[in-house]
Image (cartoon, rainbow, N blue to C red; front, side, top):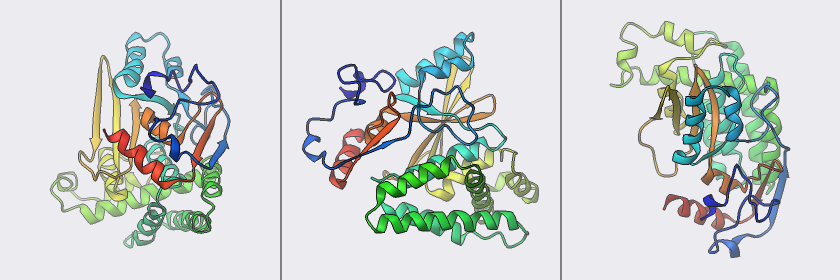
Length: 313
C-alpha cells in the first residue's frame, strides 16, 4: 500500500516523487503542474505559519527529553496517519490562525471546487456585527474579500495554479495573516449571536454574551471553548483536535458529525498552543513531496474525485 512506502514523505524507490500512484488512477494522471515552495526544516520560528509541511518526526525536537511526548508524536503517525505538520505562530491567535489559514489554503487548492471560495466570500459579506463598532475588523474583512475575489477571477479564467500560488504568498504575508485572523474572530462572534439560543450554546451565555464577544474579538487572546464550537460551525467544516494529556492522546471533533464532503482540518494542542497537522491522504491528494518542498497537481477533476473515493474506503 502507498502508506507503507512513505517515511516522512520520502519514497526510497524514487526520491523525486513522494510515492507511487494507485494503478487504477494512473491513466487519469495528465497535465501535471508543479509548484515548488521550498523545504521548511522547522528550525525558524514562523511569522505566520510554516511555509511548507514539515515531516512529523522533527516535532520531537520541541521536547527531546520528554519520553511521553515523543511517544505521542509517534502515535500521531502510526495510529492516526499524521505524516507532517506546520507551525503556527504563538502570539495568542494560534487557534484562529491554525484553523482559518488551513481553511483558506484548502479552498484555494487547484483541485478544489470554486464554490468553496465563493462560499467563504458569502460568509464574510453576510457577517455583520451591528451592535458594536469594530472598524478594524470590518476593514480586514474588506481586504480579505478583495483577495478572494481576485482568486475567484483567476479560477474563472482557467488559472487555478496562479490562484493557489497567490494563496501561498498571502499566507506568508503578516498583514494578510492578521486580517484573516480578524475575519475568523469576526465571523465567530457573529455566529455566537446567531446561535446563542441553541441548546449547546445557551449554557455558555446564560449570564450574557458581552464578555464572551469581547474575548473573541480581542487579538492576542484565545477565544476559549466556544471558539472550538463556533468557528467550524460558521465555516461548515470539522476541526479535529489532537491533545496531549500525559500518556493519553485526547481526540475531539468539532462538530462530531459533518457532511461527507465537508472540509476537515486537524490541529494539535500542546500547552495551550495549536499547530496544524497533515494526513497521508491529504499528502496523496496534493502529491506533496516533503524532501523537495513541492506539490504536483493534475488538470483532471475525475482523478481527484476517484482519489477521494479511494481514501474513503
